[in-house]
Image 1 (cartoon, rainbow, N blue to C red):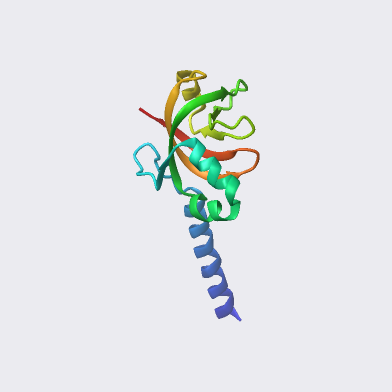
Image 2: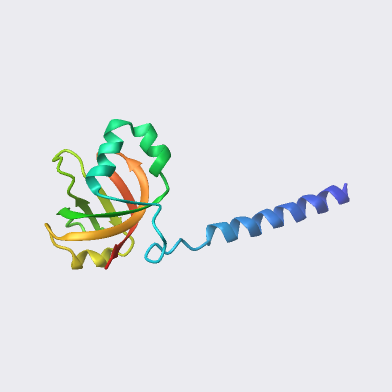
Length: 133
């Protein structure tokens, strides 16, 4: 009985250490990461509108780099903006990793942004975005 209790204790300790390391694992630095895909925002949105399942299989959790115009900047301090796609009903929403970077943007400006694709809700969403200079 004591042998099984000792084994269980060692397994629980190992699981705790692994869980702690996974929880505190640093994110990939997107400013220096090479993108999986380089696209225009309209291309990304069109692929999602044509076949969302196929687009998810291709782009979900991948590093995407987009170059296009800023359509709208969120004024709520979250660091979100929407890129122009030519379609007034859908765009690409980018959530900046550092919300302070939103100050360098203006509506209508051309920007290159790199982020992780998290799928489509109303717009196609990129998270942890960085502005590429």
